[in-house]
Every structure is written in C-alpha cells, then in structure tokens.
Amino acid sequence: MSRLPRGIRNNNPGNIRLSKDKWIGLKSRQDDPEFCQFNTPSDGLRALMKIILAYYRRHNLKTIRQIIGRWAPPNENNTDSYVAAVCDSLGFGADEALPVENIGVLIGIARAIVRHENGKPVGLPWDLNWWYGMDLYAAAAKRALS
Image 1 (cartoon, rainbow, N blue to C red):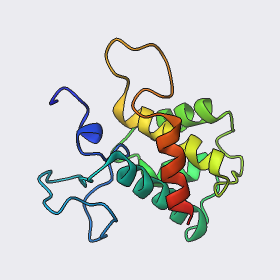
Image 2 (tube, one colour):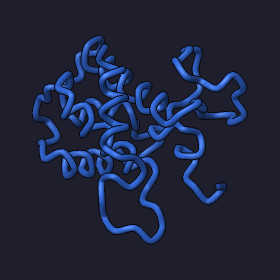
Image 3 (tube, rainbow, N blue to C red):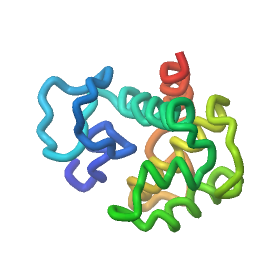
C-alpha cells in the first residue's frame, strides 16, 4: 500500500491541503500532516471538483491557465508544465474559456489533475483511467454539481 502515491493512499487524488474546510467525507482522524484524508475516493474527487467549481463561480477563473495557476502555484509546482498537461488532456487551449459547469468538462479537468498529481501505476499503459473509472468520476461530479 505504501507504494501507492500519497493522493491515492489518502483518497485525496487532487492532493488537497489541510485547511479549516470541513469537507464531506473527511476521515475523523487526519494522520497526514499536510493533506486531507478522505473516507473514499469519491469523497476526495467530489472535494476536488467542488474546488474547481468554486474557482469558476466565485473567483471567475475560466481558463485552464487560471484554474491550474491557482491549483498548482509556481512557488510549489512547474505550473507551465501542469497547464500544458491539462490542455493536452482536454484538448482546450490554455487561455480558452471553459464551460466548467458542463459535467464532461468538469470530469475532464479532474481526471487531468488526478493524472498529473499521482502519475501512472507501474506496469499500466497510457490511459486516463489509471486510478479510477469513469463511473466514479461521473458520480463524484454529480455530487459536486448538486
């Protein structure tokens, strides 16, 4: 189990940092000193998508560059590389306005973030469904949008 990426072990595939936010599905005991730990992958995916939606709705972040720039700031990440990876995955330009409330786009952003944050499992071919299937993403997106 310890060979799994931290985000997968924590059921927090977006690597959401600990904060005062009381996310639905947080484990009652948080053993990781930096990142949230969720009860299920669905809870972690829902939280990831709720953050993306908040960026879009409350902070008026409409493009991949804006969303990833806030999600993965340059002081902690190679943000340009992250933006390029998400653009490549979604097929949108970095500065193209996205319909983030569209369930397919929301899932696409989340899948690209999960892939970038966690890498790929050893021995598996290139595939966006490395860690979770589309059914789990779709269920989490429906929860996030409701």
